[in-house]
Length: 301
Image (cartoon, rainbow, N blue to C red; front, side, top):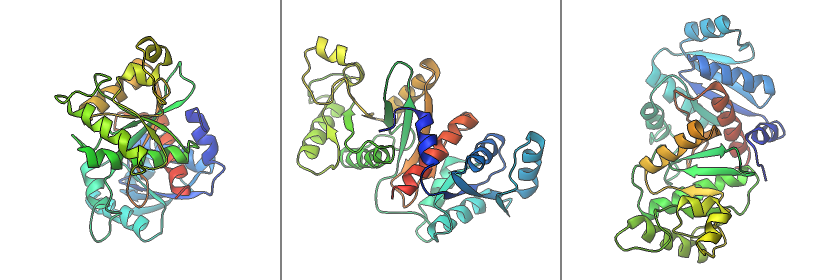
């Protein structure tokens, strides 16, 4: 089981090299991450976008993209469709968002003709290395699903389990987070947590251990859980943190990154292939880590 973000990079070097296609690749941080990924030998890259800008950015910053195939397409919507279509046709193994809106890349991913639909819910899975902890946390979903219902949460968990397996955790411990540890009929997240726990017990959600509701402190700190007298197979040992809504996920994710100085990688799971989707504010290191995570998920399919 991997315990560091660097471990994701190291493992990505050991699996078969994957082909990455980048939609609207004319972005400095994206090109930095892609060129480094190629240099590390974890991907072959196809850059779809404004060829003149791509070459200018690469040359101006010393990025070696000589081994990358460049497809000129200045229209960002068409670049997204071309990139996704390549994955759909088996010409690439994973797709990455470049300099275009998240909605634009997802619209192509969900296109009925050329997209990567599976009938499953798509969800964002962030993998975080937080100082002071000797394991990686998977946080979901702080980027896509606004207020998922019970059925959607079950699929979001299953997507996160797929990512956990790709990093070597074959039976992750899942906590559906809430504000309290007891089921309260007036607090929907506690009801969903209890139902998800029972669904896992009965095999409706596979290859994981779920227990909840639990508050964040009891999910990640064994000391806090013991102090409150909580007996649970996941208390203090959570691998996957399922947030109740996008606001909670967004705040928790950014707290881990900015307050705790955590390292992060993230992808969209649930499609036919991984979608590397990072924030425009993410560093090129975070984008590199996300590419490596996508490589592991693609190789594990």
